[in-house]
Amino acid sequence: MSNPTSTRQWILQIKPTDLPVLSGPSSTFKLRNADLPPLAENKVLVEPIYFSNDPAQRRLIHEYVDPKRIYFPPATEGDCMIAQAIAQVVDSRNSDLPKGTIVTAMTGWTEYVVLDAEACTPIKELPGVAVTHFLGALGPTGLTAYFGLTEVSKAGPEDTVVVSGAAGATGSMVVQIAKKMLGCKRVIGMAGSDEKCRWVESLGADMCLNYKKADFEKELAKATDGGVEVYFDNVGGEILDMMLQRMAKNGRVAACGAISAYNKAAPDGLKNYFEIISMSLDIKGFVWFDFVSHGKGAAAIQELIEALQAGKITVSEQNETVVTTRFENVPETWMKLFDGGNTGKLITRLDEKPTASP
Image 1 (cartoon, one colour):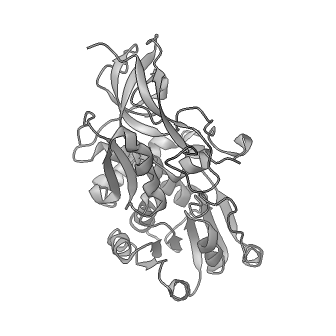
Image 2 (cartoon, one colour):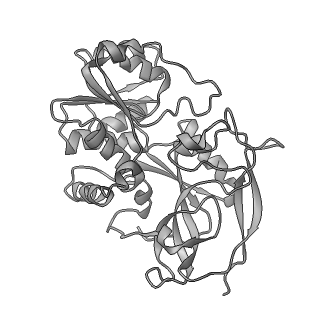
């Protein structure tokens, strides 16, 4: 069977300022056909099987994002939507990546793509562990949780750790690493339903609070009486503002995400800013590949794998939400990130695609 010479892909048509639009003339994304280049030396043709869905993608398509002030080149209107994927090598001009190899790569929302071989990372699969976890718990989100705790906030046994978005991909790993690997004194999560809170507690959290309840602020104050040494922030906005009032003297905030503001043209400001000064707080923003670029990625992944094998952390189907999706509906699945429709990592499994072994 000959290789495809063209592919369908989703392009960024119009950069959104608020919630992305999925239909009509002002639709954020557009489906198009694109030609594929010939396969040159050290190139591979890959077919995505699973797409990673990440809140950071929203920031990369924002109308007003300054390319000089973002950690990854933002998407350009008319170009394929940015996305990381697990893909299968369909054809190869590189001996290290033969046909059939399963890799992770930045493919974008496309059915096929030709990439430099060096842009693809082969996956060394683990018995009994779904390959999709290399996009989540054993990939970028696991590394984000690990570095945010160990390098940024330097959490330890004497610390109370609070994490927002605790039922999400990163937050659920923060809970496990903080409690079961670092031995933190108390771990408190926040999630958007009682069901999610019970799951977060099953991962090891001492307590999880439903931030949608009317008495959430009161319950947060009660749960954090005595102060919080470490806050791992995945949401920003109003909850970050609340947490500034709950921090202990010299508390540390790992600023990881701001999903509450990604779809707002005018994000909320901080009312409790003075708490940073009066309590001598340390707030540090970070992205996982800051540390990977300094050669710390492989050792961190190995530590996570060893913790998994030792039973300290759990990586199972409950850590991810895998949605089988026709290629025509890829944007709809991605939008589930913003309505709380997922527990753990949100993964798109492309319908009628080859299945990587578990």
